[in-house]
Length: 358
Image (tube, rainbow, N blue to C red):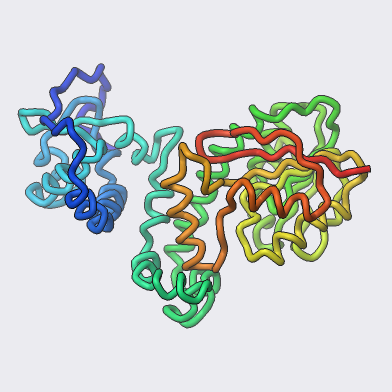
């Protein structure tokens, strides 16, 4: 996309507009909180308009940006001003806007882009269910079917095709980024085979196979999911000779033998499904096999605002829940696994190192 500066140059220093040093008083904090929808909508609008993609390394006025993204300059300036209050873009005294670390994450070409995830978390269905949070808290169940007449995934794939595409892109983005962190974290000394259970398109197992040339991997997930597996793992992909793809539901059975099983971000269903999945791993694995369970934790301080928000969204859309460290330890232990170290993967994921007992 054309940018204001096709030849990037070092970003000059800009004097930010003055902000009060003291935190806002409680009454103002609450006012800001109840307008949280405005913040989310502003991020969504910037992502959909691709403002971050249009802004180059040289600061630009709202009018210059408006010409590039084909919107009205006055409302665009208002949008940018609102975002700048939260560190997404910055406005200099001369009225020109420049990138910040956060605004760059809205660029599609940024290696750590959160554009698709920002769109996913603000899709139309989210605005429909958030006002029903009190009902979900009262009943303890999802309100999605009450609002849309069918379950979350049925609605997504039958009635909201654009949202389904956003979901797929967002999940892929998140998985690709965290897969590299997982591959960097895991010590695979003595491991010859790894199985990614409920592994989506297989980004984790692909990253591990690329890093460890002697490793063999298995990807297991639902048939419709593994049909879209990472191109590296199928057809003429470079890892196909070391990959086995298994279509199945891990809540029913896990017909896979491996030295190491990875279960990442899938234990967010109801408790019965979580227990069945963990017990199926124990039933399938040989004694002494490693099981690494990777999840967000709602009591993980660095990402607590994010994970508690996702926890509430899970309640609304599928009736699921994020785990505390204690709740996950309880479910892992109940399944018969022995828990070792619990280590951070990145600021929002933790890995529980477990072993199948003799």
